[in-house]
Amino acid sequence: MPILYTVESKRSFSIMNIFFSESKMNKFLIPFLSLYLLTCDSPERVWDNPYDPNWEIDRSILILPVEQTIDMNEEIVLDVQFNMYSDAVFAVSMVIDYDSTIIQQINFANGEVFGTENISFVTAEDSKIFLTISFLQGTDPDYRSGLLCSFDFVGIGIGSSKIQIAVDDLYLFDPNGNEIPYDDIYLGSTVITVK
Image (cartoon, rainbow, N blue to C red; front, side, top):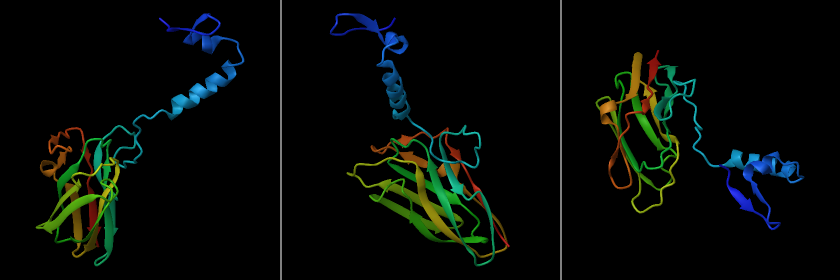
C-alpha cells in the first residue's frame, strides 16, 4: 500500500501519483530521482580478475601477472591483489610458496590496501615467503581493495616455478584480533618460467 502524504493544500497523494501525474514537477523529479538512485553508495566490484572473466567471484587474493616467461638474471615484479569488500580486515598473514631454485625473491613493497599507517613483516626461507601486514593499533583504518604488496623476483635457474598462497597458511583478522573465515575467497596463483 502506498504511503500517503499531506501537502499544504490538504490534498492527499501517494508516491505513485508523483510519477504518473501530468504536473510540470514530474519532468524535473524523475531525472532527479534517477540521478539520486544511480549515485547511491552500494558495494560494487572495482577490480579485474583474469581468473574470472564472468565476474562470478566476489572475494579473491590474486598473484599477478598470471603467467610470465623471463630470462636468467631478469627481474619481474609480482603483485598480490587483495580483492574484496574488506570492511573488517585489520590484518592478513600468509605464506606464499615458490621454487627458490628457479626464482629468488629480492625485494618487497607495501601496497595501498593497508594504507601508509601499517606494519609489515616479510621473510623468505626454503621456497616460502612469510608475510604479515596489519594496520597499526589505534589508527582509524581506511578499508579498501587493491594492491596488498609487490615482490621483485629474479630468474636464477632454468625451469618453471608455481607461485601460490598456501591455503592452510592464510589468516585474516578483524580489529579485535579474531580470525575471519575465508571459505569463499578465491586464491589465484601464477607460474614464472625462466628460460
